Length: 553
Ligand code: ATP
Ligand code: MG
Image: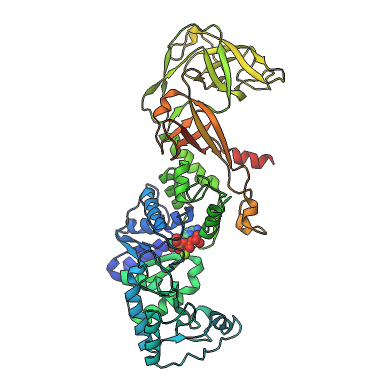
C-alpha cells in the first residue's frame, strides 16, 4: 500500500522486539479457534491480524485448533474453519491441535506436582467456588491443599486411568488463595470428563483447562506473540506463571478488543441457538455474520479483509456499523460484476408497432471494467418492473407514464401510449410504440430522454428464484437489550421472490458467481441453485437503502 499507515500497538511491540533482537527477530503467531462453531466476522479480524503480522514481518502463522473441550467440539467445525481461512486468502504454516499435546501437557502437570506447585483436590465445584473469596476478601485453603507430592502423583495418575467419576477430583495449581487476582487463587488445571473427543476418542478422561492448555501450546510451538481478545487480560499473569514455573519457551500474550458488528450477534453460543432453533437455515445462511454465510451471500473475501484492516486494532470493545462492510462489498462488486437485466416485480410492456423478429442487442457487460458484450434478445413483448410505470406520474417521475419517452436499456426509445387495467384497478399491461431511428449505438432520433429502464423479452426470459435479505435483527445491538436477544429478530429478514424474469444469458450461471442486476443491486448464485431451478441471493442493494430508511424514521 502506498500510504504510510501508522502502526497499531501490536505492530509497535513487534517492531520494538525486532529492534531489540528478541527471539533473533523471529515472528511466529497463531490463530487458535475452538472447533465448536463456524467462524464469524469477528474471527476474520483475528485471522487478518495474525496472518497479516506474520506476512508483514516475514514470520509465520500457525493454525491451532484449541480442542480441549470434548463435549462441544466436532470435526465438521474443523473442516469448515479451514475452508473459511483459505477462502479469506490465508495459508497457515502448520496445522496443529491442542489435543496433540495432551501427553506433553500431562507431563507438564506432573512436573508442577513434583515441584510442589499442583495438587489434587477432592472438593466439589460448589466447595471450590465457595472458598474462592472475592475481590475484597481472600479465599481459603482447600483441606486437600497440603497433600504430599507422592499422594498427588498417585491420585493424578489414577484420575488419568479413569478411577474417578466426573467432578470427583480436580488438579489445581498451588499459588495463593489470597492473591489479589482471583484467577491466581489455585486455578483449576485439569477436570475429569468421561467424554468422547473428536480426535483422541476415548484415550483421555481428564482434560486440561484453557489456562493450562493455551499458554503451554503456545510455548510448545514457540509462538512469539500470542494475540487474544481483551477478556483474557486478567489471565495474562497466570499465562506467565505457568510458563515461568515450567521453564519452557517464553511466549508472550497480548490482548486486543473484540470486534462486533451492528444488527447481529457474534458469540458462537448465540449463533448456535439461531441454527438449532431454526431461526436461520444453517450456519451458512446468508443472513448469518459467519464467514460462510457472507461467502454464500456473495460478499467477496477482499471486502472482508479490507473491512478487518481498515477499522484497525483497538484496545476497547467496539461495535462497527455493518454499513462499512457493505461499502467494501459494493466497491468491489462494482468493479468485478457484469451488469445484467432481471425483472423482480414483472409487468408486461407491449411494443405495439414492433414487427421485427429475432432482433438481438449487444450490451456491454461491465462499463467499470470493460470485458466485452453479450447478446440480449428483444421482442414485441417485454417484462419491465411494475414500479417503472405510473398511470398518473408523480413529479420528477421520468419513467413510463402516458406520453413519456423512455429508453429501454441498450435498445430503443419508446413512447408510452397507455395501459390496460383490471376491474380492481391493477395495471395488467402497458403499451408503447418504439422509435426505429433511436436504436442504441446508432441513434439518429436526436432525442434525449431522462429515463432508462431495464427489460427482459418475455419469450426469451428464464425464471429464477430470488432471495432478498434484510438485517437479521431489528436493533443495532441485540445482545445489549433487555430480555432474550432472540426477541429482537427481524421477522422480515428473508423475502423470497419465487419467479423473477432474467435475461437468457444467465442460464449458465453457476453457484458463487456474482452479477449486478441493473438498478436492483448485486446478486449471487446460491449454492442450492441448479440449471433447472436457478436461485439468486441479493448480496446488497446498490445504494444504502437502509441508511435512508433510518433517516426517514
Ligand atoms: P465466541 O465468543 O464468538 O464464541 P471465541 O473467542 O470463543 O468466540 P475462539 O474460537 O476461541 O472463539 O476464537 C478464536 C480466536 O478469535 C481467538 O483468538 C479470539 O480471541 C478471536 N476472536 C473471537 N471473536 C472475536 C471478535 N469478535 N473480534 C476479534 N477477535 C475475535
Ligand atoms: Mg474461546
